[in-house]
Amino acid sequence: MDVERLKQIIVDQRAQLEEKFKKEKIIDRDSSEIRKLFSHPNAFIILGIRRCGKSTLSEEIFRNQKFGYVNFDDDRMIKLDASDLNRVLQALYELYGSDLENIVLDEIQEVYGWEKFVSRLRDTKKVIVTGSNSMLLSGELATSLTGRHLDFTLFPFSFKEYLEYKGIKYSGVLTTAEMSKLNSALHRYLIEGGFPEVLKFGESFLKSIYNDIITKDVIKRHKIKNEGDLKEIASFLLSNISKEFSYSSIIKLTEVKHKITISKWVGYLEEAYLFLKLNRFSFKLKEAVFAPKKIYSVDNGLSVYMSPTTSERDGILMENTVAVELFRRKSKIGTNGYDIFYWKDHQQREVDFVLKDGSRITELIQVTYASSRSSIEPREINNLIEASNQLHCNNLSVITWGYEAEEKIKGKRIKFIPLWKWLLHI
Image (cartoon, rainbow, N blue to C red):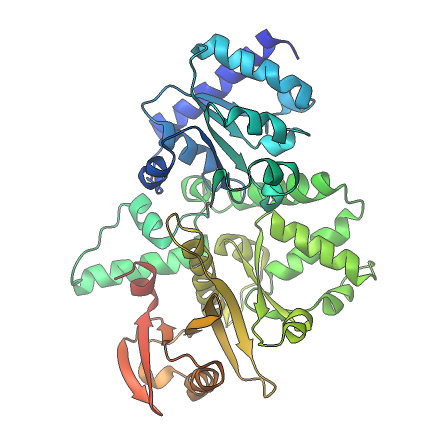
C-alpha cells in the first residue's frame, strides 16, 4: 500500500477517534497513573477484550500531546504485512512531523510479523500497543522486550466506573433514597455489564461484540474449520458461568471427540478475554492440574445475552461480578498481583475464591446472594471455616447482597460485606 493511501486512512481514523471524544462521555480509567509510569521512551501494552475501551484509554494517555494513531483492525488495512510498517511510520511522519514521539498502534496483532517493528520503535518513541489477545506478549515481542516494557489488562467498566458513567454519586453515609438508587444501579450493572458501547447503544449491541470476538479473535485467527462446534462450546460456557467444567464433559456437546482439541479451543476463547478460568486450589500440583476448572465471563452482559433466565441467576451474576473484579484488581497498575483459585475438598465442601500471594494464602472469599443473616446458608460459613483450617488462613470474608457485620464463629473472625461496598472499596 502506498504512503498517500495510508495517510488518508490514518486521517480518517483519527477523525473518528476525535469525534468520539467530542460526543461521548469519557471516563478516566487510570490514565494519570499510567502516564506517570510512561514518562520515557518505551512500549506500553494495553490488552483486553474487544470494545472495552483500549483505544479511548490510549488517547487519554496522550491527550494534549502530539501523537500518531493507527488502527490496524480496519478492512482497508487487511492485506498489510511487516514490510508495510515502515510506510505506516513514514505516513505518520508526513502527517505529524519527523519529531513525532508518541505513537498508538491499535490492534496491531492483525499484522503478521509486527513485533520487531515495535521493538525498534520503543528505543526512541513512547509506543502504545493495544491488542485483544493475551498471547500478544508471547513469541518474538516477549523475547525482544523482556524487562523493557509495561503491560496492563483493561476490563469493561467496573461498578465504580459504571456509576460515574451513569452520573450516580455516592459519598459518606447514604440516605435511604440514595441506598435504594445505588442498589437499583447495582442490579442493572449485574445484568448489563460494563461495555461502554452497550451502555450507550443498548443491550442489542452485545450481539455485535460477541460475534466479533468469536469470528475475528478465535475462528479467523486460529483458522478453525468446525465453526459450529466452537460456537456451541462458547455458548455452553457462557450459559454455565461460576460452575465447574471439564474437557471430558464438553466433548459430549460436539462432534469433536479429542480432549486436546477441546482444551485448545477453550484456551483460544480465554486468550480472547471472553472467559476467565480458575483452577482448583491444591497443595498437590497433579491434583490441581487434573481437577475440573471453573469458568467466568469477562462481562455479565455477554452471559445474560447468551443464557436463559434461571431462578439462580442473581447469585450467579453476583459471583461472576466478584470474579471479574478480583482479576481487575490483580491487573491494576502498581499492584504486585496475586493468584486466584477456588477450593473444594473430597467431601464437596467449596469456597468460591482463594487468593494466594507467593506461597501464602492471603484471603478466602465466599459469595452469597443474601440480604440478611438468616438467609445465609450455614454450609456457606461452615465451608469457609473448614477451608480456613485446611489452608491455614484466617482472613475470611463473605460478600453478601445486603448484610454487613463482623462475627466470631467457631473461633474464626468473619467479615460480612455488602457487594456494593466491596466493589467501591468503602
